[in-house]
Picture 1 (cartoon, rainbow, N blue to C red):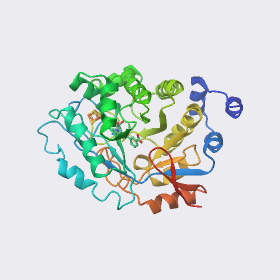
Picture 2 (cartoon, rainbow, N blue to C red):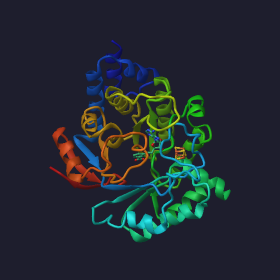
Picture 3 (cartoon, helix red, strand yellow):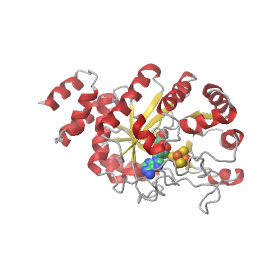
Picture 4 (cartoon, helix red, strand yellow):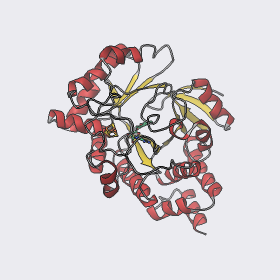
Length: 360
Ligand code: V47
Ligand code: SF4
């Protein structure tokens, strides 16, 4: 049987093909798929499940691509009443109690502001680092980095090196969406092309800046498009080894122009994680983002190949503007409880996956 053949390959540590990944997506035996993904995860990470104590910050929602990224419910155009741009003081005030809450990371992403120059973005990193020297600043997606290269006429490597100098520690994985060019053209025609997204992450890895990778799924793409997306990531990871984690992002359909009205189902969310664990054999960490799939499903995801839960977060706009009904914050104790009750060992980590505390 197809699944047995793929299981034997996975057991031997043999790389799965795109066809194998599609067969896994189509298998009716969800529990056998879960077992395979869980075994692959446990070979890599044992029973340990990591989380981090972090804070999300979205300094502006104004974006030159407003309206053209049709899945985005977060952005606004100049003059829109719901548009906002935080001042330097507001940004610092939003994270003023960072150390007090035990947070070790600030995750910073936002819109491509129509009026602000690169110095504004660079200054945010510099200010955050100066105010919180021990915190890890994970900032700006490849889409933002691409925007900075256009604003400055400089290379991605030059911009990244300067940002690192200012205090940037790593890149988040956003902006990847779906790499297949035809889907991307329909989803977000104006935004950095797939090759450019990959090129910018390669440039970061070349400088020793680690990054994450995401995939926005559950909209107009096919399962083959998802597998193609993961295949391109696997290929880059073979070359650089610079990706820390893969984070599938479940599409949320409210308040945006994309003509897709249904959210993803729990089974699709779980299947996507399991296929990712088996197909992305060179990614050590697979993150379930509870903000998008819910706390309870994230707990179940720990038996479908995920070994990492993001995070305490505190305030989240991108998914909540698109209709998410999850809270915006989970206290650390709740993450520990969810992991423990899943029969796993909770471990607090920092952004670089160094272990800070274990709950035995
Ligand atoms: O880039 C936008 C996506 C991303 C919607 O790197 C949407 O550790 C669902 O990248 N429905 C931002 N998703 C979030 C992100 C992320 C989150 C957690 C951890 C990490 C990490 C990265 O959210 C955007 C875009 O791909 N997004 N609109 C929507 N309607
Ligand atoms: Fe702007 Fe990012 Fe939203 Fe696109 S997805 S409109 S680039 S904020």
